[in-house]
Length: 279
Image (cartoon, rainbow, N blue to C red):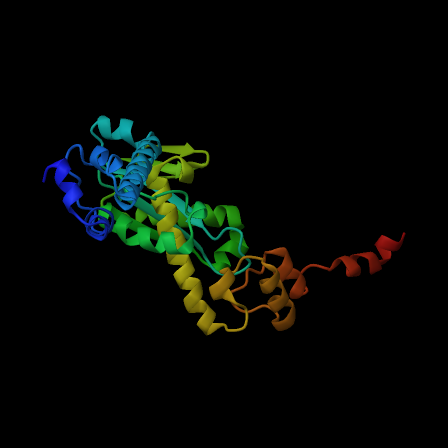
């Protein structure tokens, strides 16, 4: 098709072919639409131009997001892994970590720190990441581990389990703001790595989707707390349910609101009523 032939197409056909079906315009087509006498055709050209600008901006963002991976790929390393964990702040449920090795040069539009994405965006990205991955590993730290070794070390434990679940194992590992002990390959901690590394960002999405789905399942086993909605985070809704229903087996006994409800630590009122507090 020549650019001038676009003028022979009705506007609905232009929309269907070049906006809805993403058919490629002929060379010079954008200019032809821009100069078309029909307002509808010019509007199609403007939308296509905006789409191209957005795609170019996303390409530049993804290049920046691969700034830690690209030098490693350029050195000939094919197995560059990234890992991240979710569920550190909730009052209930396990910590979930994911580790991902992406194929060299992977670019997935929309990939980002999972906290910057909606649940719908994460659900759409999860299968794309898995399709582009050489390997995906999931690790978790259970409630008794969180309560016995504290949440920080439970997060490290979940991360290490996720990395060890990778097959093949990475040649180099990128970690969000920390390093993991006793792993037989080089690793690099990156502060706010889930927003700076495409592999860590991918891992954060996989972990978040996995944990959210798990909490929806656990909501059915422990109804009344709203775990499917707030995923165990200390929202007003969750705190009200905790006060009303008490703690369930999913709650972390070492977290203060749960411990207070169980009488494991005194409330503020109880503290002030103690003889020592009245001296």
